[in-house]
Structures are given as C-alpha cells and as structure tokens.
Image (tube, rainbow, N blue to C red; front, side, top):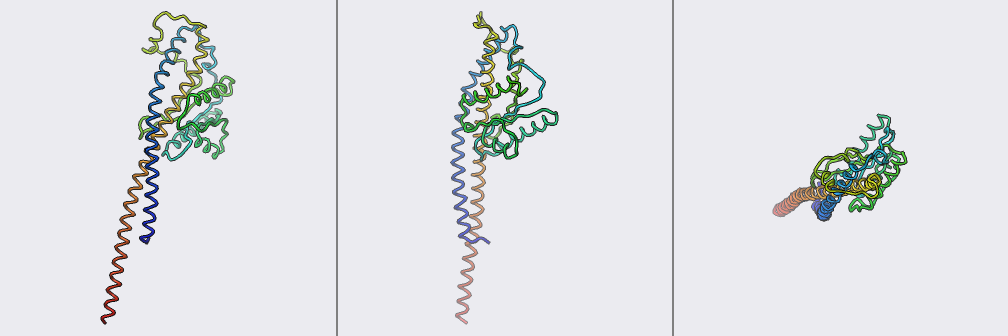
Length: 295
C-alpha cells in the first residue's frame, strides 16, 4: 500500500500535469479562433475565383487541350495526406493516415502505382517508419499555413501531372466541423474536374452578366486560372486541417485536464484513508503502551 508521502508526490505530479494541459487547451482555443477567421476570410476569394473560371470556360471554344484538365488511364496516383507537425491532438493525425493507408491498399490491389507526398512531421515520420518511399515532404506550417505553402504543394503536384509521372492526385485531410468533430475528406485535385467549369448555379450566372471582352483569348486566361484554382483548393484544405488540428488538440487537452482532476480526487481519497489508517495505528500503539504500563 502506498504511503501518504508517495500519494502526496503523485498528487503534486498530476496537478502540475493538469496545469500544462489546461494551458495547452487555452492556447489551442485561441489558435482555433484565428483559424476559423482565416477560413471565413478566404471564402470570398475562392468564390470569386470559381466565378472567373466558369465565365472564362464558357467563353472558351475548347478546354480539352489544357494540361491540368487532361484525363489519362490511371497508372500512378499521388497521395498527399495533410497531417500536423505535433502530436497531443487525439486521433487527428491517426485518422488521416489510416484513411491514406486504406486508399494505398485499395489502389495496390487494382494494380495502380502509388507515390507518396506528405505535409506535416507526424505524417512524414510515420510513413518513413513504415518504410514507405516518400517522394516529397513539407513541414513547419501545419499550425499556421500561408498561401505560399499551398503554392509549393500545388506546383509540385502540377509538375508531376504535366510530366505524366502521375495520372491522378488525391489529398486527404481533416475537414473542420466543430471542436468535437473532424471528418476525414478524400479529394481528387488532379485532373481538375471539367464539371466544375459547367456549373449552372447563380454564382456561375453572375460571372456571365454583361458584355465581356477577353484579352488575351479565354483559353489562355483559363490556362492561367487553373493553377490558381489548384492552389486555392490546397490552401482551403490546409486551413481546414489547421482548424481541425487545433480543435482536436483543444478537446484532447480538455479531456486530459478532466481526467487529471478525477485522478487527483481519487488519489486524495486514498491519501486521506492512508492518513486515517496511520492515525488509528498510532492511537492503538499509544493505548497498547498505556495498558502495558498499568499492568
């Protein structure tokens, strides 16, 4: 049975741990609010980009010659999981990698080759530990991704696709729903779906209002817009992943703080019982000593 001194030491240790988890929860909460603000600020840009693409595509005589729209027989697929640089975020990294490994097994059974690209230290270390050949890895921006980071990822994927080293590119990331819920999304980013350029919603119609003169030709403008669209989609995914990471970390640290509080309560109860047992033992010894003296 643990002594009172041992129990006090454990209570002190768990209390210090709870202070750390509580501080990490507060930091994650502040970063989550910033990530949500960045997602909301990015949406108008993404909507306007889509309007420009739809309007330009409808003015173009043909879009089939654009490299990022070309479709080929799928022989090699690039898988790009978006993970975090740090842990202590519950199942945030695990569920993305688990989905990526499942996709890898499915493609392998179909006889399709896989090339691994990864964002985040946790994903890169896991893939290398499992002896996967990682073609490219990017780290250091999972907490606060910038548009330049999305450009780097998009340029690498576009270069591989245009060079016909890959025939399809898939990103896997956590979509932010709430601090308690993050859902894994598997999104094809290359080739860019042509049906995006054939939308018939209000946003697409608004891009066609009025007389528009295109200079240079619409095909050339669209060829420049498609890489921007790819960058925007990757930037949005990075922002969603960053918000999901902070939400998962905030929830994990809150649960850890709650568990630490329950453990402190249990240890305190054990310590009180141990102290009571020691006091009872001392009383019995005093009584036994007094009885011995009176005899």
